[in-house]
Length: 213
Image (cartoon, rainbow, N blue to C red; front, side, top):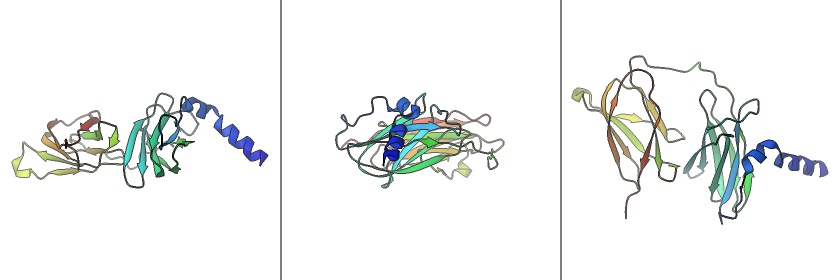
């Protein structure tokens, strides 16, 4: 029992947890639990600005970007969750956990360097890459389509499949497209995009607004 106590104490007081603990407290989140931790690489070095998602068993997802020390924190209702993390050139990693109300727990995530044996780039194509969020930073369960505007004979909409982060990426032919984002309970979003072939454009974040009742 003494050895277990020493181990547990050492884990809690490790530099990683001290760096990320900061002012973590449940005092300001009644009936909610907290999960926090650090995203690091194989050497244990923190990975700053990694993407992190907390996914509930219901499918509801929260999104955060880790800070410069690789630290993240979520507050959520009691239940079963999965934490997923990603960063360019690393494999996606995940961990399961159970959140209890008014309790804080540590969940560090380690990312391994990814190989690029399955990477595919389409030559002569344009790139569309975007993430759908609501104003609170939650990942939205949206239907996203791109419809060609300058080629009526080929106006079949293209479906964008969103990942765990609510992000999607396509490499359609160069041209003008109508983007439509439809999300239950939110206003529809529509905009016209001119997609040009060449270097990949930065990933864009699209914010959707709730319906007014």
